[in-house]
Length: 638
View 1: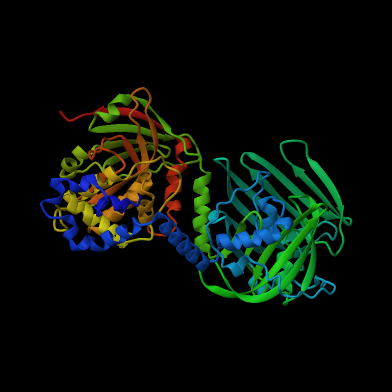
View 2 (view 1 turned 90 degrees about the horizontal axis):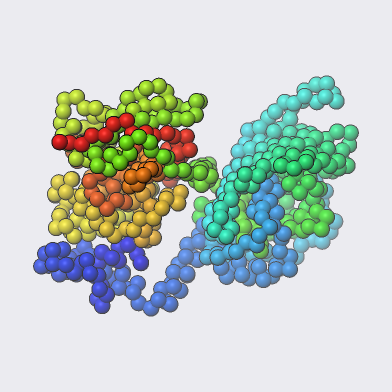
């Protein structure tokens, strides 16, 4: 159920906590003007469930069409026409180099797709008659990329169904390598493709990393290549070079090295051949082209047949459309055949690709979007471990202040701990500090002292009041949430910041169930729709609701000790700090009690002021496996 639906009574639907006399104060809540629209919307939603489901499906499909992902119907139609030609699933690296991407797994891919490209954008233009004349030879003498376009970097985001699962980065730069045969140096290109994909099968997520580096002459002639493939903890390295008319290639994994020698001709090219061919000489409508290249993942030569259909206005990743040429690609190597669809512009540059049958696609995107996905992939790749706490641990939850010794095990790392709000830091050496944490009951009295143990911030940064893409305090749902929670306690916008902050914290704490941290970061309104959230979700919603009621708020990132007396463990945790006009006060809606004990250590305050919140989380997440914590001293107020 939608989070906000628990805040408003609907005719015929019982909402117990809203019917309490202390909440309504004798005024029927439905008569309050600010709730009229919400009541209407929720009442409409409580109608026929089947109609709601249908409406949502239509709306979702429409939305997804706008950003260029395939709808259920279009995928079904396309898969029915190509079922007999479904591509064999190959490794992500191979696809990311030569065309569209596909996960490397022998397991079937279970797709529960719910929309996206327009029908037109994934359905091949089969009705266009392709010229069946002899395929055009790929001209290989001229450079495939002009010098004024080097260096060059391109990013792509990858999807399985409608879920982003990884990214690809391709780069081209000038390089100079020694040629032993000529005893000289020559200008060459260094081409690199790097991809990271997270594949989930049977509830288990596996990270796949690939890297392929090719050193080539400007015309695409391969000199040597190297790279690696990592699937979970298994890693394989490979390398190869052209010598005496042969490609000598070796793959080294956990077992014995595997080496092959393949005869090499002037027509043969390296793993980036398709991209190079299209950019050297962009295809025309109805043109057919053949490209032969070496696939280091399959360790085989591949014959690719490209059939250009027609230029059409095609949706791209940012929701706009561009005139792109649809190309059907068929790649064959021995008994294996793979089919794909590419969309390229008039200059031959790829903008998106699709593998039918396994519902896998990639989109060219801007660097900002790519960095977001890259940082998200980094977070997903971090193993988050709880940190054991040594020393007089039972005192953590009964004291008003606790001094911890915090140390990094790694010699080449430096420790950075926040010295703000509720904790004082004394550095012992670059890797070790003593951190004294004060409970919320002591913060006010300490802040009044002339000499404060922690950094003083009597004024709030103006940025802690603004709405951001993540802490979306200007969102109508968040604005309404803040007002409703204040009204539930008989408060208004004119009340003190502390009274409003505690009322909002209590309301969110009671109505938003807590779940374990799953490495995701959601917008505040998305958390409300989900109806539950982990500590980061709680912090985002709480900070957004506080800012919506004109209370400066920021998010603290650190570790929180559990209640175990035998051996407390500190887990990754997030909470909120609000400014009451004189000082910053910690507050946490993911905990039942409004009083915070000195049971947490803060490493950073974050703003989540961009679309990439994962970069804010990574430094602290990475500390978990490198941190030692012990209690030095604990004390309570007399």
